[in-house]
Length: 434
Ligand code: GUN
Ligand code: ZN
Image (cartoon, rainbow, N blue to C red; front, side, top):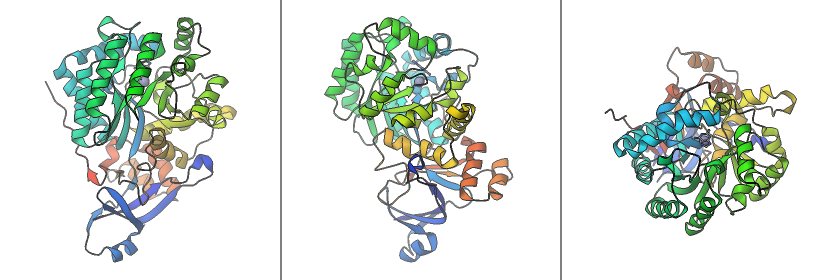
């Protein structure tokens, strides 16, 4: 057994449902076989476990491992292309880079950049939008598995509107997806997600083949994009004249349920919000991406009022980095900018969105997202460099909530001193240089 010691903050009681931040100044978390088996004030815990090894995480804060519910594997090297709306950015920036993953050596390098970037950001669980190339997705699963990250991912499929080298057919999409799922779904921490890119690039036949694949892989997830930009929504409406709305293009094939995560939903109709809530589906809110592409201001209040579950995503590479602290801060900004139509957020809300809400969206709430007895010990240790502005701010924090707000305001991947999954510290991958 191992005792982890530090200032531990988490949100086992949902702040969106009246809960508050749980903060323990000098806590002890006792870990055995990857799971937290006891927790309490360190002094008391130490009395009960006097001889066990202590991992001393004092100085800074210990948070549950962060959960990123939307991040694109093949885009890590093109973060930061500014000044374009979604469809132009896809065409001129994202898709040319995604095509490079046909070269397997290139793809291997990108798997390391992606997994290393997530670990360095304190992300322990991620729903990763894969690649259009099956061999690249296989390599991603292998790298995540080697490092120990919890990853749900899958082959991205499209059969129209993209450059020809990224297109597939319904049959091939199904067969390659099934083979990847056979290799990785349910293997240690990996799970398969059926992943049509977005309806704009998928025929009804391809979406139907996705539904067949999902049926064939029990417990698999579904992820795609939804209502991201006005231009995209208009195009989808023109392509699917018989659909009631964008969500219907997926729901009509039975793809929207409790194991579905739809990214963005910046421009939903009321009907879609009702349908998402009834299905128990989740929305991955990606505020940096929405601002960078000028997609719009996310209507969080409408989602909450309709009972739609919302978590956070970095949406790298439209999003500007892996750090979910930044996404939390950006989510806060967006709600401030919405004024009376916004949903005011506290630091506890931001932590919840970045941890427990993501765990719930991915069906892992009983395992990760909080540091309670019975949960696996997934945590991030934030310890700012002495003298850094975050270090100064934390030293002058008036309360735990204040310290957390300062962490969201000032924190970054540079403040991540270590990332643990199931009690084991992850070693970030070293980038491969050609
Ligand atoms: N819609 C379809 N593909 C993408 C993508 O790669 N990024 C974003 N933000 N939206 C998309
Ligand atoms: Zn995306």
